[in-house]
Amino acid sequence: MPLSWALVFLPWAGAVLLAVIRQERPAALANIAVSAAGFLLSLALPGHPGGNQGWTHIDALNTPLVVLSFLIGLTSAVFSLGAIAAERFDALRLRAYHVAFQVFMGAQALALLADNMGVMWVAIEIATLASVLIVAVHGTPPAIEAAWKLFILCGVGIALALFGTIILYLAAQPFVGHGDSGLSWSVLRGLAARCDPGVLNLAFVFLLVGYGTKAGLVPLHSWLPDAEAEGPIAISAVLSGLLLNAALHAVVRAKAIVGAHPGAVTPEPFLLAFGLASLLVAAFALWRRRDARRFFAWSSIEHMGLAAIAFGLGGATANLAGLLHMLGHSLTKSAVFFGIGHAAQRKGSQKVADIGGLAASDPALGWGLALAIAAVAGLPPFALFASEFLLLTEAAAMRWWLILPLGVGLLTAAAAKIQTLQALCLGDPTRDAADAPARWTDRTTLGPIWLHLGLALVLGIALPGPLAALLAAAARIPG
Image (tube, rainbow, N blue to C red; front, side):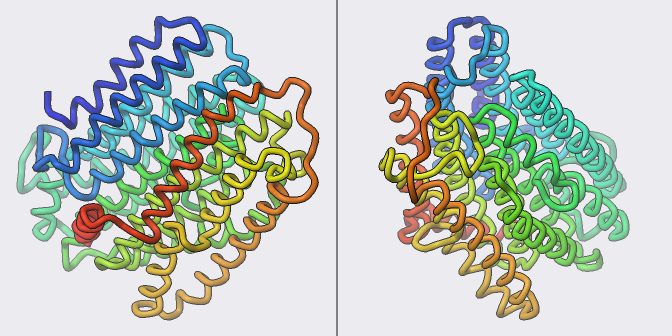
């Protein structure tokens, strides 16, 4: 079996296995084992020669995103080992959670590796449906409402994306005839210069709005805060770190196709508009959030906006900033959600006012969470500081008028995050809940947090040579 398909079917085979395990701890351990196997298999991607393998394609753009996805899948599974008891799932909900988790992981891999735009659409839809099930698994009224909002809004988005995919196929049909080659990203990019520019323009608008909904871009973004605040704790890390990246990756692939036609409307203004709207709306919305998980969900909208701005600027350096931002955001935001999730279980509440003084009551957790929030705020020396610095320098060189809205958005959001850092981690400790989880669960929380922080630090100050070369090659693909 080709490596790309093995990465898809391994989690799905694990989902079948997890469907028959009823006990809590064996199921959590099996989930870790399947996730670890997927991650180890993904490490073979950087050495793979690349190219097309049927409906899949391996290149510099999707390789780091796939490896990152399986890494976060593994750390989320490790976190779940300690957190699952506090979720209080019955046997049916426990199996639904683990099965949906691995179905999501396989669909995420397929969405990133798909060369066929139709297969990519199907994979992102499968990932969305798995996310809906995970968000709703508690069965409480807020969880059901959040799951319905995710289903309805993302359903609208995926319908628009499907329409854009069909239009893209129609643009290629005069040259390739009938068959799935008209949906191949590689084929479409090669013949885009010969397609009707008006049809390409129409396709890109639908694809941007459709997949932009999945990426949490304003204005169809309101599903994200509810889904990340009401679902199981691990789903917050998975949605922010994985699903958003897959959707934005689809937008970047569409941009590469449309941008290859000199007569088509340039995609850059659309990406800049959506990115700026997401950045500014989220930056000011952060000041009104009192729920910790909802607060950092809004931060995800902000960071997806920044990545969209980077890809909107275009060029190798700006694209590199966008890719680095996606990687850094996934690592640091998932670390934040691990810390917030465990603190919320300890305190019996996820309100910011009820979680305080973590650095005094639990130094390893408190300082780990503080560093993770500082990293998400874009403070040095972590990856997001490097990507935001690259973005600002490119904006100054290419679109000087972007500096003011970018500066306002970045500073407003960073100030809100620093204030929340102080409220959560500093000051006098608040009281733990009477049924707080046992201390041994700290190990499954602290390990993923500090691992992610270490990787974000490496990306920020000492990018390894092979990874730098891979990202440089990836930055040339979107155009």
